[in-house]
Length: 261
Image (cartoon, rainbow, N blue to C red):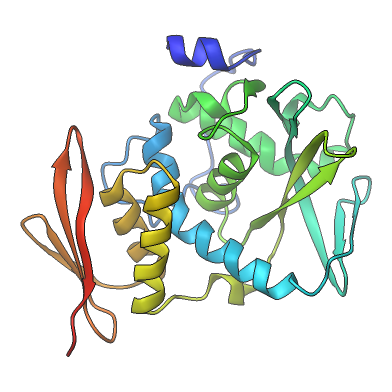
């Protein structure tokens, strides 16, 4: 608890037994492996990363030739060149105070119609005991920042949402918005080579529970797999073999390779 007491600021007033919906918008992701501790940030983030890394890269490729953007917080719309999206405001980073502020604190008095997703996130945070979703404000660092918060909210609590970072005020910060009903092609399954490349890139960039990350990624991708001891075999067109080894309480990837048919 001391870590969160030091990093995070104002905590919301507790609600009476918050009960998240069991289905529909805001329902927890069905691709999470069995046994994920929903109060553990590292485990929840690890489960969301494969899906969101894939979707965000696909989104970046889709809009790469559309440098001009405009956001209307009153209407809840984002325009990116020829593309238009409805959005939900998630929160903002301030590089002046080096802090993140969740949108449900709503110091900007944004209309309620753009805050639905972030209220769902707070409700789930309280229900799960996931403290980073329970505090209004926190210090920015490599673990707790707008990108990582957006990946968890969009990854765990919605099927068809990616996010966009809107820079503000001459490098003073950025607002993060979840894009509603993002094109389904952004969430298309990946092939074995793309899976290997994505896993390699993610374990180099992020602190992860490798086993949860790989299983959740395959579940979301609807790729069947089986276990033999500490070795997982994923059945793409050509099998991909992932060997794990114990690293403290978690598992890390020891070897990752495609098997030639």
